[in-house]
Amino acid sequence: MTVTRTAQATKRPVVYRLTPSVMHYAWGKSQQTSLAARHSGLFPRETPDNAKPVSELWLGTHPNGPASVSPLFPSEHTDPAPLSSLHSTPFPFLSKILSIASPLSLQVHPAASLAQRLHATDPAHYPDA
Image: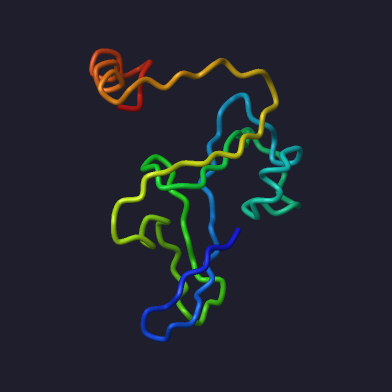
């Protein structure tokens, strides 16, 4: 996936490669059977199947798994940076690509104030404040 931005000094477009963060949950597919893993470019096809399933690819700015960006053409800049570095103001979002091997439970996300209270009283079951 690529993101385009115009360089300030030269006014020419800079094309960025967007690299997702990978989440490994028990319900995910193996690297070999997951189309999401294969098309993300993060796992070479010859990678042997390992114990960590690929369950989610995160494309966004979530602090637990921010996507990274790097210029598509290395002459511009070679170090990957967090996706949020492309914006001068906070730009919170998270898009997920799921790779599901077994049924999932229903997930309900509470309002921020309730999430903070639940996390404070039972962080083992509510890890995200």
